[in-house]
Amino acid sequence: MAVNEGKHGEQLAERRLALFGDEPPTVKLDDIFDVEAPDFGAPSMGMSPLKAYQVALSSEKKAFAFYDLALRYVNHPDVKALFEELRGEEADHVRMLEEIIARLPPSAAIDLEDEDAYPDKTESLRQKVRQADKS
Image (cartoon, rainbow, N blue to C red; front, side, top):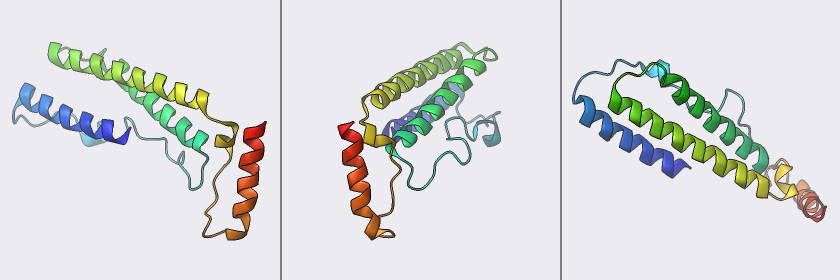
């Protein structure tokens, strides 16, 4: 996902340059600061793989909603087409993450612990994972 998002950023910069040249942007960074960022406090140290995927899913849904709403206010045909494309990509990301979540083993719901900080709990965690996956 991170690689895809990096590519999207590069593609957007190229398309903006092609559409508007050196014109300064009319959108402020504050307007788009957290379009696809997780909600504040959602990510946490040691969260389970399931929770991590759920945070990612929430972020993708938030990005879809942004483009969906923004399309109501966009008049420039090329920008409208771009936003429709981006909204479609976000919908694809949502479906992809929902499919991944559906295939996770039960152990993916177990929060992780720092093995270095809690070496005596490492075996206990491994037993929880084995037990969860047997269920």
